Figure 1 (tube, one colour):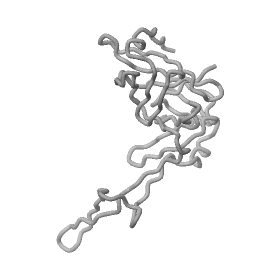
Figure 2 (cartoon, rainbow, N blue to C red):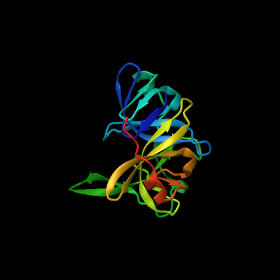
Figure 3 (tube, helix red, strand yellow):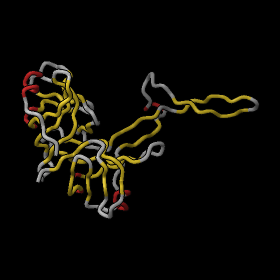
Figure 4 (cartoon, helix red, strand yellow):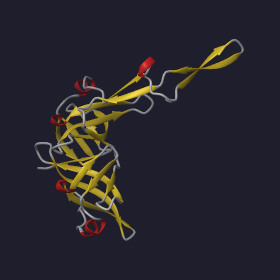
Length: 205
């Protein structure tokens, strides 16, 4: 049975706990294999964890279930690391963050070093964002990625895209062989706009 990963799906641990939502899918650059999913929870105190794809035992458009419990998920690697850049490591022209410190009768602004983020994923891999743009062979934005379909080994077999045809939104399913390039916020395919419009609509389910 094939699994379908969709951004925004609820992620459930093996002990039935709600872990948050699937916010990104990490794809290996050479073999189109999904290596990890990113699970995110919280707003102000947001936590994003990297879960290896072999932790997933069931995936549907609205729900992903893991083989690990909630406590084990807490020990998974964080998706991103945030740190201050100081000294020679800071980029020229970087805008500092300011914090307010009251001094005497007046509050004064003091700069903090710039913040930098790094993703804890393999070099060259792409953490595909929700709603990544779909770019046709003519370099035209035709729609957005809705979800990915995997085989049992975690390889992508098809992509479900949301496009507008004659003023109406529709879902189309395209084979992974059509993918030319995967980036964090876009996916380029070898098909033309007219070819995509002629594809049959994807049935829900």
